[in-house]
Every structure is written in structure tokens, then in C-alpha cells.
Length: 295
Image (cartoon, rainbow, N blue to C red; front, side, top):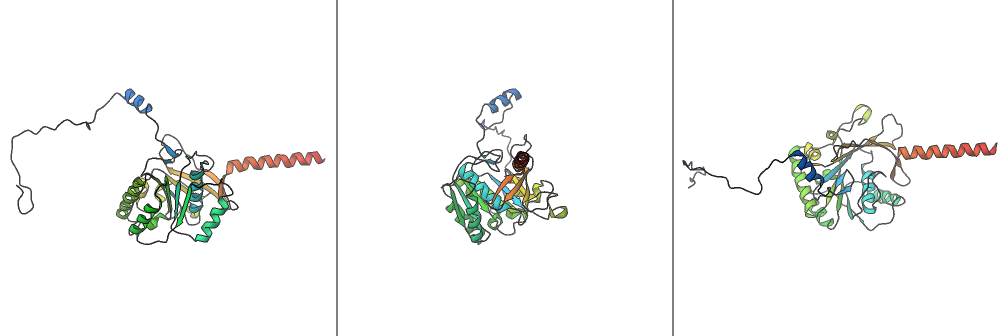
């Protein structure tokens, strides 16, 4: 019987306690049989191939410096998921209902970006949007959880406002990741969150896909399925020349190399530099053919 002091009373006994067998016991199997069994299972469904899993509670991070294009990237990601258009014209997406939450930025400016992006994507009723002002992180997360009911993917631009306390401190980030994943699980949704990066490298650029350059506790990165970093392309003068890095991703056996893109201000979308080079080359040939025909 426990003592009043709260300490447990030590009991001496020679009785041997047997551990009951359980269905949860571990068992080693032949490696070939294990591999065959796993191969025979249905593959984990992905909402964005190799980037965003469909499993509720999972989330990815989109990070970059101020003015580098995080908001534009997340708007395009939302459109890709809502319409089924491949993300960055490269990664197949499962068309679904998405909830896009803006926690920062001028609302009129955001509407302008949305209107421009509609020139690139077809009309859809799958994209749900709201703009919320920062307040108590607990209250804010509750509002978000209620607003996104029925959405398969939840995108939060300016996610640092949902972190309780100082989002640089590991303890606060740990509490945040637990809370955000629970909210996503309750809504049977996956998440995409934007964060800033810490001090940049030489000449103000992130020249390597360092996932721990994301500003915040390491728990943010450790718990994320994928970390996408967007930065100005090295050795390019234009701020519209950008590179999207995949510093961390689920498909560890696949090398997701950085993708060079050019930001199109007319449509507020990103175009692959490789595709632009092909179009430019075609245009060059057409001009040369026209000149030859004249002479």
C-alpha cells in the first residue's frame, strides 16, 4: 500500500513475473520475404508526387527569405492542388479541395495576385481562401481548424503566427508541431506551411539547400515530410530568376534536384527556365527563317 508521503513502498518477493504474449510482439522475417511483402502493399498515396503525402497530419514547409516568393509559391501550390495541374509543371497533383489561409500581407495585394494566377489555371470551386489577422496562437489555430473543415489540404502563409511564444525556441516549436498535426488529423487533411529562413549565405543568397536555414526550432524541419526552399538563382541579376530546392523529401532514393524557374509577373506564376529556353530557341529559329525568306 502506498505510503502517505507519496513514495512507492518497496515490496520484496521471489515470484517470477511472466510477460504475457501479445499480438504486438516484434518478429524478424527473411529480408527477401519482407521486401516482397512491402512491394505487394498499395503505395502510400501522394497529393503532390514525391512531395506531399495524403496521410492526414503530415505537413511540408515552404521557406525563403523576405520577398523571395514564398507567398507566390504557395498560391501556385494551392491552385495546382485545386485544379490538378502539375506543381511547377513537373509534379503530378491529386485534384482536391484546399483551404488557403493568409496570416500576413496586404489583402488587396493578395487579391491581385490571385486574379493574375487565374489566367494560368482553369476555373475551380475547390479553392477556399481567407485572410486572418494575428492574435493568440491558440485562438488562431482553433479558428483555422474550424474554417478548413472539408478541405483535404490546408495551406498557411505566415505560419509563425500560430506558434505559441517565441517560434525560435525548440520547446515552443515542439508544442506547435504537435498542435498543428492534431488539427490536421482531426480534419483528415495534410498541411503546407510557410516560414522564413535565417541569415543567408554569401551575397545574401542560400546557395545550398540547407533545411536548417529555416527560421525556427529544428522540430519544425524534423517533423516535416518535405522542406521546399525558394531562393534567387545564383549569378543571375533579375530577382525573377529563382531556384526551388528540395532540402528534404520523402523519396530519399530519388534525387530531387533544384529547379530553375522564372517568375511571370503578368500571371503571378512560375515557368520552368528549361521550357523558356526551348521556346526562345524556337522563336530564334522562326526569326532566322523569316529573314532567309525575305532575302
